[in-house]
Image 1 (cartoon, rainbow, N blue to C red):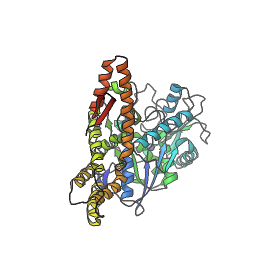
Image 2 (cartoon, protein in one colour):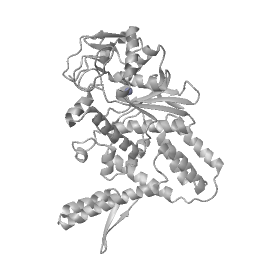
Image 3 (cartoon, rainbow, N blue to C red):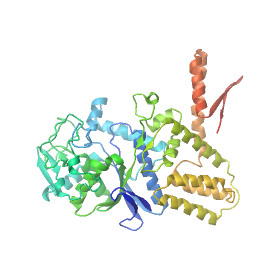
Image 4 (cartoon, rainbow, N blue to C red):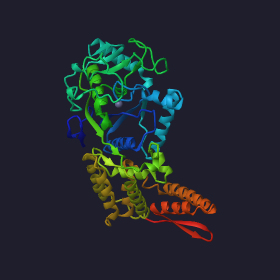
Length: 464
Ligand SMILES: [Zn+2]
């Protein structure tokens, strides 16, 4: 398999430490708020990668963290802990906040068929592991104490800027917060491994350690969890593109100085989904989430379909127009599949020809949009019988995860939505609010749903 490796900055052949086994680490969410659609693009793509690895015959061992302490507002060493910001905002304990937003994230993952990784670890559950790593780094001179905090000495890592391609002089105090730059640092890029000089006063997010009572830095959490659960050699590390610096750069520095050897050869960074083009009226003052899309009447899987049509290493604009196009294409696709009759017997030769093309497209830098094209080619191909088509679709849906053969459930959800809109419209008509009633009719029409008023009440037709 080939993929874009952000460590080497080119498309590389995927090489693992152990044949056919992939130890995969993905940075999870900081659970202080909802995960917006941009975040979800990252999780969908990681899910597609994981399922692709499995489809290609790899045994995947995947770990994801949940950050519930130490991630400061700046992504570096300045600003408040994001969890503390949420605690103050919602007047809840950090545990309650973490649980609530982890559950919401889980729910959204389920709506878009993102499989929950086998091993998901809360950062606050692994404090001992961070202490173990930091103690060794202090012993070996990679870390130092200053101003009450433990810092990593980046001057000890000659390849510190390898992943990011940055230069030290680029690091002009990147502090957008009005927080004083820490004068205890030896080098500008040095970062905190353990804070004892707590900014939070006497609150719950603190632990005893040999270096004093305090809390871990964000970066050490991922190194600690990855090494503890996946061992000394990681095959692939995933994350969003904005995590390259400082987060992943610092993970590499800590892990390699702790382990004494190269940690991970393959780094995959997922590009942003740009949402600046969105008319905020639809999600005023809120974070646009998968659940919100569902409330607005979209099938969340249409969002997954949209992401499948993109290349993971390229930024993409998200607009409602694009989502509507994806929705319409997706429902047409489901309809076409529904019309396939299960006839003839499985043609193994044709099955393999198509399936190899599918694997080739995925192996070639995760060509998901090419796999969708292949699916449309298959549907059009009269030389393939219904049974073979359905078997291929069933097999490919292990990666697509678009519920391509579960159309009934989707129809039911759509029906519930349409009926609720019809009720809303009847209520509006009863109140002589014709403006609202027309608005509802037009809103549905935009989604390809036509309302027909009859003597027996309002009926509907879904146009594809
Ligand atoms: Zn991470």
